[in-house]
Every structure is written in structure tokens, then in C-alpha cells.
Length: 230
Ligand SMILES: CC(C)(COP(=O)(O)OP(=O)(O)OC[C@H]1O[C@@H](n2cnc3c(N)ncnc32)[C@H](O)[C@@H]1OP(=O)(O)O)[C@@H](O)C(=O)NCCC(=O)NCCS
Image (cartoon, rainbow, N blue to C red; front, side):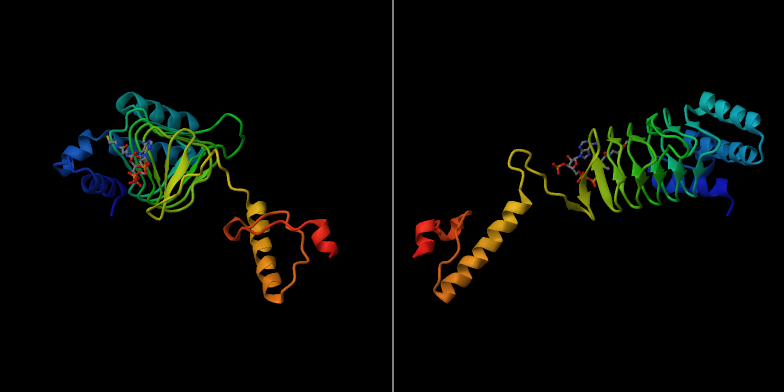
């Protein structure tokens, strides 16, 4: 199937408001922008940078969508509404990606070379989200509206907030970390070891160990040097 036809069919499948093939073809800014980007990208790859940029800038005027001609965009991408979408030069977008209005796939200004995001297959980037830097949004993830994402996102995750954090993975809510009572893994491990030693000593009928950490659950009294000397 021709790519432009595939774009129209994708838009019809994803947008319940879409009524007819030709309505989508002629009036959907996202579909129009992808058509223009493909032409610009072809010219860019052949070294016709000026004409590529000319098409890209015309695309901004007509649709409000700014895609750098060098950006790589996969198949069946759908840019819904589209206005205010910006896609940077070294961005790579996979297949079946859904992008809403106001999304920026941009650089942080700190990187050189590959400085824009890689968006893998079946990712959804909600309205107004900013994805910045040479990070990877792994496949089947969702970026919440208005989020600012600065770090890699694992597959099948939902990221929300500023800065973006993973709130769901594989559709399961990620437990919030208590910022006040932050767990101390080393202390936890020492407690577990202490617990085991106490159990072993109890079974052996000896108490040779000095308890520096109490096992609260068993109310173990701390032994003293005097106890040990006995
Ligand atoms: C992120 C989103 C895609 C939902 O993904 P989801 O995996 O179904 O996640 P949930 O709805 O279960 O939300 C998970 C948590 O994130 C929170 N959350 C969801 N979207 C959020 C957002 N944009 N900003 C901040 N928090 C958000 C939810 O309140 C929920 O928090 P809780 O568990 O404390 O209640 C959706 O909320 C979203 O942002 N959609 C926007 C779509 C869009 O751009 N539409 C424009 C059409 S024009």
C-alpha cells in the first residue's frame, strides 16, 4: 500500500471524529505534514538541503507542524491535531506512533551529534509533552499530557509529570517512594542477618554475639560485654 494511503487509513482508525477518506486526506494537518515531510526527507537525503528546508518551512506555515527534513519517521505515524508539534533533526520515530498537539521532540542544548529522542514503536505522546535529549522512549509506552521527559523510558511504561517519572509499568502502578522514610537497604540487611544469628544462637543455646541492632519483632535484649565474659 502507498504510504500516503496508509497515513489516511491510520488517521481514520485512530480518530473517531474522522468521517471520510478524502476529508482526512485534504483537511488533517498531521496527515498533510507527514506527506510533506516525506518529500522534504527525500530531497534532504539527496543533498538538496535548501529545497528540503523550503518544504519544511511551508509545512510549518500550512499546518503549524515543524518537522526537520532529516528526522526519521516510521510507518503509520499519526499526528493528531498537530499544531505546535516540533520534531528535531536527529529524532527517530518508529512505527504506529501517536503524537498529539504541542509535542516537542527536541534537544536540551547540551548534546552534540545525536541530540534528539528516539521514539520506539507504538508509543503515545500526549498533548504538550516535551521529550528532550538523546533519550529512548521504549516501545508501547505512554507519555502523559504536559510531561517533560529527560530520561530513558522502559517499555510498556506510563510517564507523567515534570520531570517525567514512571507511574505505571505493564499496566501496574509503580509504588510511590516515601520521601521522608527512605528505606536503608544496608540496615535492612543487617537486621535480617541479626535475626538469623539470634535464631541460630537460640537453637544452639548460646548467646555469644553482641546485639548492636535489636530485632524489634522478637524484643531481643542487647548483650553486654559483661554477658560475653561470662
Ligand atoms: C498518561 C495517559 C495517557 C494515561 O495513561 P495510563 O497508563 O492510562 O495512566 P492512568 O490514567 O492510569 O494514570 C496513572 C497515574 O498518572 C496520573 N496522570 C495521568 N495523566 C497525567 C498527566 N498528564 N499529568 C500528571 N499526572 C497524570 C493519574 O492521575 C494516575 O495517578 P494516580 O495513580 O495517583 O491516580 C493520560 O492520562 C494522558 O495524559 N492523556 C492525554 C491524551 C491527550 O493528549 N489527549 C489530547 C487529545 S486532543
